Length: 368
Image 1 (tube, rainbow, N blue to C red):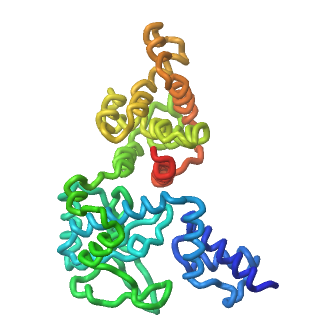
Image 2 (image 1 turned 60 degrees about the horizontal axis):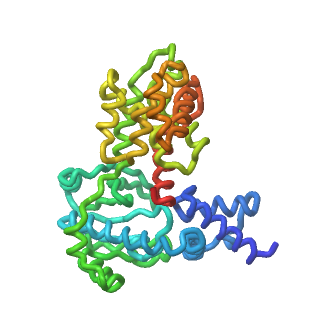
Image 3 (image 1 turned 90 degrees about the vertical axis):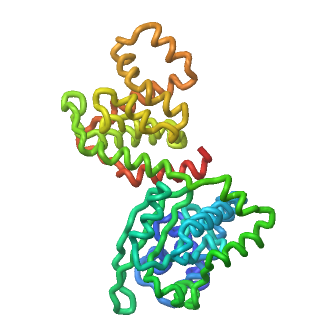
């Protein structure tokens, strides 16, 4: 066996697993890659270092993302800076790829916060109207059980806040890549880095001209969740609740037009109003979605019920001509076909988070 070649193959496969987000931890990625390449047990000497995998990931980034990664890095750093400004009283420290510059598709902003009160942190986020989830993660390291508290903020780029006790701000953390003290930056240190890397950038002007961007995908999730409790007529919807139906329609739309975010959103969100006002679900849904969808998506949702009249041949001639004049008429007809097709009991569908992950990635790669 050529050990150098095998090690390179394992490095490549581990990097691929991490770049495509199939694995998030270096150890799991290298072990899975090793077993796959060696078809079973793998010698420890064949496993690459975390640094080797990280460098290979950057080659993936350069190959598949090109110069766009530099724009993303700048925007991620500004997101981090604004979040650090907002949470300055919790002595934020920036760590990870946003600081080092080794970002890739799907990277998030990682901040350490130091406070004796989780409620103080979430209260600050609430004041800004930001969406977030709190996660208490059980971890066993070096024979010791620990609970880590993470706050996941749904911003333009995902932000993960890891919360520590107020008296731990000077504790040295070890890097899983090098084993050395982890690189991290305070707000002042990070501002100096931004001035050095982007000398033409006026931070105060950026802060005055921008605001925190409410994550539209989190709004979609909040509107979709209640649909699970909305039952429908078994005569027309034998599949069951509205959420299950909506996910089926999305899945069919994804198969038909996988790169059309506007169309996919119309398929996923066309019935969100049924949890708000079942008697007028189209208008109530559009009102809830106002400002978070494009005019094309809005038009498709607004007229999706007309497709059933077209199929039943009950739509008036004037209304029919109005729809046919639209450049999106054929897509509307396709949406109606997906709507009627998404009524299969027991169909296998993705869950809400999987659908939103698909749409997030599509938005990032296609700039929709």
